Image (cartoon, rainbow, N blue to C red; front, side, top):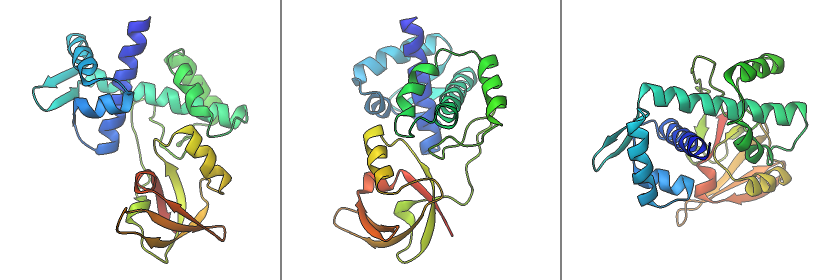
Length: 221
């Protein structure tokens, strides 16, 4: 069971990195950073995953999901995000707490149960953080109008669309500052020295680091 959970965590992580970076090959260093493990550990696991037919190892380049690995990764992402909707919408759990709970639940449910939960929830297209939920067939559709906060223009108003990979404590902080899906913001200033951004949200100014801003997606109003 422990080996199965580790396999699923690695495959979901690789799938997330593929989606986020829009590439096919993911470097072992990227996987290690996201999972908080050593590169040596990733190298060892990669050999097992290749043997299981889930990835292909490209020497000195990284790893690539096979069709089977991609299906598993998208399924786990689907399960995770549907659980987040269920926890937030049905159990009224705050959006900064649902990720960690969904991390446990995503491994425990069958496809049949998740399809029933999908039906019960009314076939949601996005999770509470605004990220798209893969369909049962593995289709993943992003909002074609979205842009990163780092790409916005000063003085223009935008609506918040989604938050990608921001940890629970920072999501809690953002929610306390008035951040929520569809909330309107305006970019006030960019700082060249650290690439941070100052925004106006509900009449108050807030400075965000580049690392946070590049994980926030918006659309022009």
